[in-house]
Image 1 (cartoon, rainbow, N blue to C red):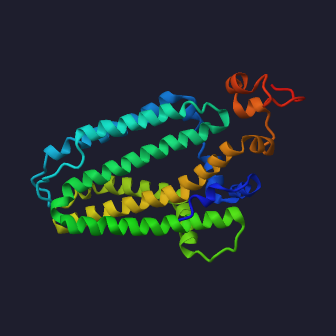
Image 2: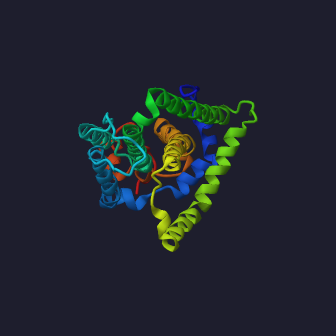
Length: 292
């Protein structure tokens, strides 16, 4: 894994990240200004998901008699764990508030979103594990997570290698996995909404198909959905969040270089509040430039 190496690029080398189509997409279309400018909108969006996560902690005590799964014997998602994760997420948001720099607002929002997705992924895995543990047995659980880990490692290694080659302009290795994932993500971002509409229409026209099968086929279907969800989140982390957050890391590492590159004044770049508190009247203030 080449994670430490991709953090050592110079400013000039980091500029090649702007050629990454995923980063370009996140910069131009992934900037939720209305959400981080109006925190109430973010709260309204995230509260239902937090309520769902809290509600999942009670399902251990309400076993469906028609379920193909036996009554769970171990609760891997106790209520106290929900409060631990919620507290950690809130503390991470509070910690990032100290980086009150205008050019980092979008990056901070995506860091908070990413940490929430990781919490959601862990909670869903513990939820499924609670109900599947008895059926899969310890051996089955080990095999399941071993497969997820191996595939996740291959996907992460492929993307890290591609980013390293991109940053340091090393010889490009024909990476079929990286090319496939790039094409797949672009396709889903472009046409994913069509699939959602088709599913909604199918459920509306054929409401009888909305139920979950309670036989062996239903068991395998849910297990496959769980596996696909894990791999999907790993792919999203590696191909959407990782490149963009790496770009945000270099903006934080070389703020003045990126400011000059984007041809912005210090107030436009840092924000008036940060400029007045940390830059104005110090050696960092750029002389001879009219700050608006």
